[in-house]
Image 1 (cartoon, rainbow, N blue to C red):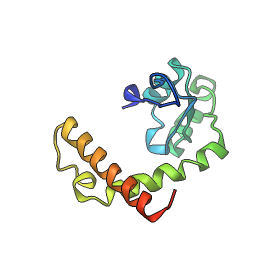
Image 2: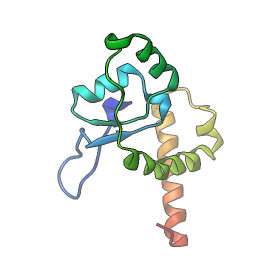
Image 3: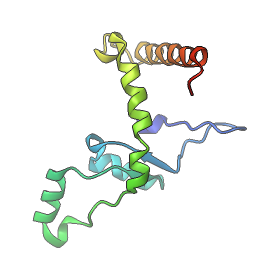
Length: 124
C-alpha cells in the first residue's frame, strides 16, 4: 500500500514521496518503518507497547526509541473520520469485493458519494 502513495499538487504529476505518513500503532512494523526510512519519508507512527518492551529488553542492541511528531499525529483524526465514513458502506467495511481492482472501484465510488454530499450540504 505504501508503494502506491500519490500526492497531487496544483500542477505537474503527482508526487510519490510525501513529506510524512501518519498512521496508528497497527502500522508500526519494522518493515513499514524501513520502507519509509529508505524513501526519506517521516513516519508519524507511535510505537506499540509490546514493541517498546522488546526493544528495551534487548538493551543497547534493541535500537533507539521511535520518535514521532505528536502534533502531526493528532491531525490524522481527519483521515480517521474519512475512513469511518468510507466504512459506513457495508461493501467496503466487510471487503465483499475480493479483487483489488473492484475494491478500489468501490472506494472511489464511496469517496465520490461523500464528496458530492459534502458539496451539496456546503461542508468542507
